[in-house]
Length: 134
Length: 192
Image (cartoon, rainbow over all chains, first blue to last red; front, side, top):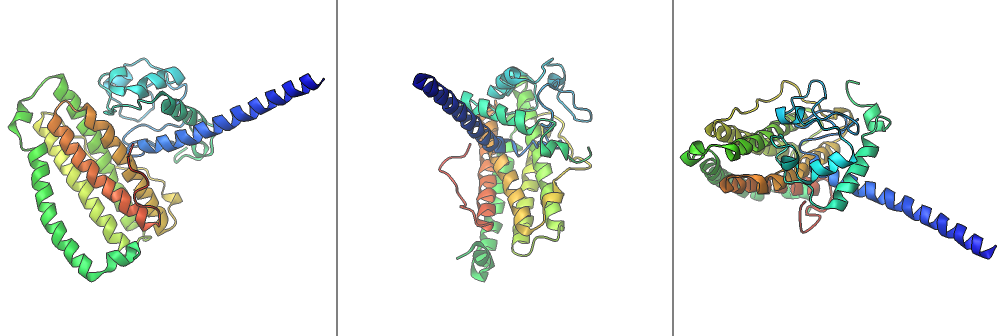
């Protein structure tokens, strides 16, 4: 009985710990996203395309955005794996991309950034629900 | 001494005008020489030059957007002097960056992206001078990161050097804007 209670407590603590870690990761991801602020925003297109609805979107497919031919031809669909590869080295992942940027080299930073993009860029997020022109 | 008191000091303003007059000339001359005045750039061809033109065009697009953003700030009615003067000065720097980038792209045989007919900014969230300055600071921080990410990928090292020169200017904008809203002007020893 005592052992069962301890196990339960350990599981509960692990769950709390995992939750806290996830929250911390997305907070770090948001901080990393500030590096993108010269060209990108969540809710509207800028020099780069908007990130609301990014996960699951076919690369180069936002209507009205002037993508490079390379991005339009990339046949990528943005998910954790493709974003991770692209963000690590955009010009290698999609040669000819307009994103002339060396990349986010730290794997943990990329994971945090992608976790934040999944959350903040989801259609359900406040910023994406209220985006201009929607 | 607060940032605003510093900016209002007539003696400092006079010396700043003198400095800006001189340094503006020096920087413009050096930047044009670095970016747009070298025949070797025009002669260079191939995939490396094409990639450099793409990087320059992305930077140009962001600079043109920054010019437009400062215009929105200047016309918002939310900025009082000396913050307004600051915004106009920084806008002028971005315009100089854009001019030099466009000339360089042309010299490399590329076609410079034009300014967009319309830009979208989150104007509904800008309710005060501090909001405008924080928004500008966010854009400048992003510009620092963008140039930092561009410097290593230029094929031509002189272009990388010139991009680093612009990076330094954007970093100064960012620091001064942070100070203007009461934040630590230089939050860390490194930028990312």
